Length: 262
Image 1 (cartoon, rainbow, N blue to C red):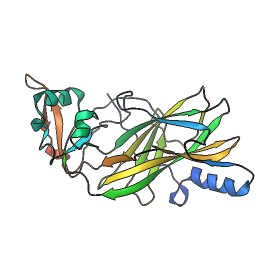
Image 2 (image 1 turned 90 degrees about the vertical axis):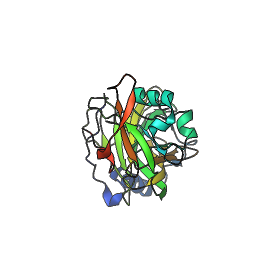
Image 3 (image 1 turned 180 degrees about the vertical axis):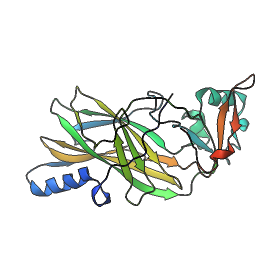
Image 4 (image 1 turned 45 degrees about the vertical axis):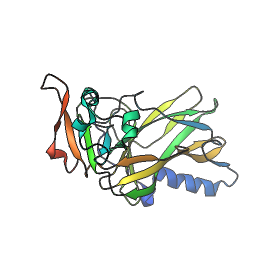
């Protein structure tokens, strides 16, 4: 089972973030220090771990919202698909979901694997979400299966609705921390992003800041198409239901204004 991250935010300077402010200050103080920006030129590798290769540290995500225009409700998806949804505890990303307009529900769960490109140590100093576009949320339906338990992982909570998107960092035990991870080519770290929106469908990317002996800079992920996430507040919620002879789902009206869990 999974446990939600503590809903506290780390204080940031000027709405940008202490780590990012320090990066800008250091850049001005040391003009000889090479600043490297971009995924291909930096000293770190940032891999987006495919969904299904990890267990989320969130209490009910990941899940997907399916537009009603594509499929009216989960029961219209067919018995085989309905049983799979119930067994998984949610609509998850696969060819069927993609082919029916599914979009990750809030919060979107992104797991990053960070590593260095050499044996020189690189420190990950900050993270900044970049909102590229924002529009009306998807109107549809979703299935979720909240539960309480522990999946220890470092977490960054990203509030994409904030004017300067808020982020709070937490260690594997749920304790609030500043982000300061060190990596080499033999030393990998994982960081899970929980990107939330209460009122929109958002496209976004993440900028990862680092510092090394060769300079400071940032890497933006993903390189290609941005991440997408929609608020669930315009959609109907369903829970998994195993009361009958076959796995199914049951309508959860209490979630019409958003999922609530432990």
